[in-house]
Length: 192
Image (cartoon, rainbow, N blue to C red; front, side):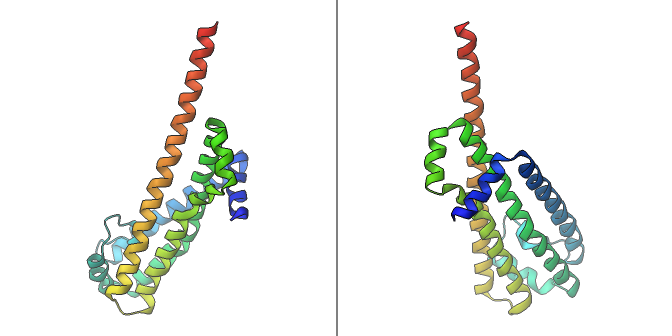
């Protein structure tokens, strides 16, 4: 965990590494949307499971019989791209959170770093990987079942929940930094 946190914090300290992560994040995001569009064309309008925020077990079980060889091939490409996207996203949002906390709440940053808390920003990536594995298993390896659909939906919900928490935290840290800088500017202006 220490190495993962060190990697993530390196992206918070290096503008070039951060920009590279943002580029990979954006390019893989674009790739996911291109594949999603092609996927919907061969599944009667359904998107890959990963892109369905309201995904439920009944929806998974209803959609799996519609999958053709073309849709399975596209889903495999989607999953391959979706192994890059969440890792880049974790580095972008975790790196941004590290930067914002280091500059806005330095004492909290020191405690969070000592407890290896920045690794938590990679949890959405872990759950996204598990979601992809569950989806690929349901699509390619096992006949559709309540259990495989439930596992897929469970990892999907865990991914969404941790993603919302991580992004919300990053936004709050940004707000704290902006407010602290604004208060500093007002205080400095009043002191003149």
